[in-house]
Image 1 (tube, helix red, strand yellow):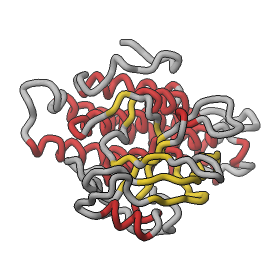
Image 2 (cartoon, rainbow, N blue to C red):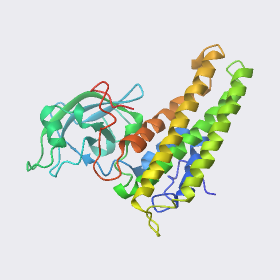
Image 3 (cartoon, rainbow, N blue to C red):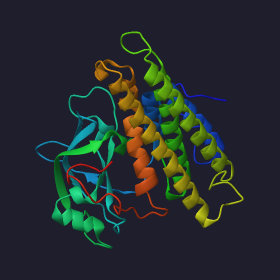
Image 4 (spheres, rainbow, N blue to C red):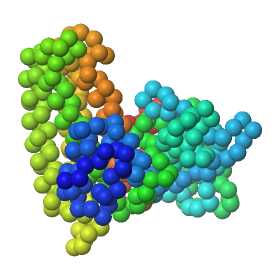
Length: 318
């Protein structure tokens, strides 16, 4: 089957593709190169398109910018809310000029999703309101608000609509499963000293078996739900069943990644030197996005913070 080189984004596998094909493609892509697969996915598909999108403002202090930060970005600058009715408690914040902040030579993500609670009072209340007639909406300014890598995408990507949730959940779960499979491969391989430790190798085999069973089970579920875009259309509760099944698979991935990390620590030596660490770092944004797709994304176009209303107000849960 076709595979992505990451030079040509995987446009052939989109919302109109049968879910089994979507699952097989992205699982393979995540296994081969989790970081590259994630960059290709977010560069191809704008998953934040259904969210309320603010408008960047010009300001004497400069336009909105996103600077690299630990595990994501630090978002600063002025925006204002658009003229339309509020759609929930998540907000997409674009940058000027395709995300090229001053001093950056290469394009990166230029659309960042934040919960409304990080906005100053008037703007935050306006976003949660059910209506409003201000032509430009309330203005607000952020200063160093943290956005995890998994909550960033590209405005130039093909927009995903509310009818594409099954595709998003399937693709992200498949990427996570594929990347976790790579984690077990690396865990079973030699450490920084070139030797294979018995305990991690045995653990890798057990974790790989868990992933294998989960992968087969989820693949079977995909075959019973070909695509919400393809006739015969599925009943309304089909997507809910799929979301629950995907959520279970993602929880399994989290368990596998955490267990692999713990076994790496128990093997002794410096975990920072272990080749597994770069794989875990690469899978982090995928797991962040998986939480959005499986726990925070509702079955309609109204987003919710019902399971994310905790933690530091300046950091997105996930």
